[in-house]
Image (cartoon, rainbow, N blue to C red; front, side, top):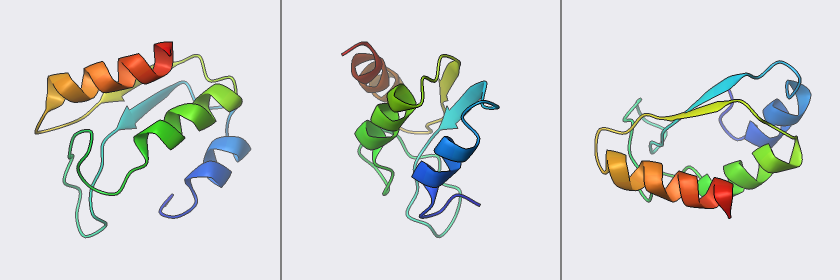
Length: 79
């Protein structure tokens, strides 16, 4: 649904988004890769969330590097 259109999706529905499940993949299947895996621009997503004033919950869904992914997102959000 949002492949290649994430910025537009977040902007259009910013007033309706209350939580987000973060994970990455390479576009072939739902891999739930952690930070650094796949093709999700994690820093770009967090930057966009800050721009739209997102104040909801972020859930990191990673089958690998789960804790490291959580810590990376936490640093980006707090930084």
